[in-house]
Image (cartoon, rainbow, N blue to C red):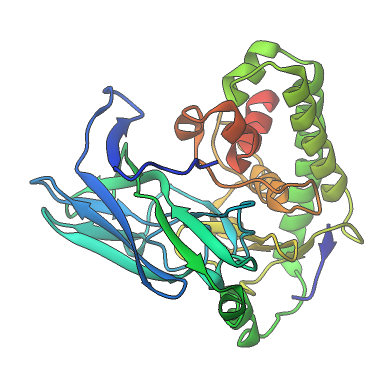
Length: 356
């Protein structure tokens, strides 16, 4: 850590969706229908249609409907997954901001156009498959109070051939942002104190979590990572050890920490974000203003586990960097073991759970 100046599987052609009530009821049918279409070149349109008679207020932060250059799709060439070149975030669901929502009326379609080459390295000629899947939390119509339910969705699989030369003519979204962003001064004052405390707490939490993952209660490991396989336990332990090592130092290490929004990723309800391509981590005003240094509540967010969450995203800390397959305990418990082991929030949740 250097303080600086500044599994989704490819889906079938048919679509499906469901509502998961993480608090009370069981699953019920859902109206959400997601369609991907090609516009031209490597630009696609992603649209969600509400086939219900009711209106929903969708919490779009962290989803494919978000305007921020986050990982929106599963993009794969014939040989491998395309490398993502945007930012990954940690989202706060406490007191959601109105501008984190988009209302979708009965029968309405919401859509966003995305230039894939600005988010992914499409440097191989030939066919690519694109799909998206996940969940969107929501509030009732005319409300910003999350219901605790999420609309789950799978899209169609979109396939087309890519000319890698033309794709590489597109500047990456984060590079375009960086060119018009002036790097701010180093973390100073109360922000510097908060970051140093968070790094120290991160190191302690990650060290303890590494020991628990390696040789602790197998049932607790199963709860979070959906397996007790020794190889998986060692992978998780090794990632925690790597995070602890980076959090231990502020003079060197694979990551750079920013206390300012150097890549314009601090949208409403965003606590922090990581740029995996450069191993940069930026902390947003919400991180400093709204989070305690350490929480005494199980599975609640704090500064220490937010640092830990972001550290797992950085591939130079431990490769491969984690993804945001799910946010929060209930959603994380719905993951497969493979996706849980590669989910940033699962590490934060486990570290928190083992500390209380």
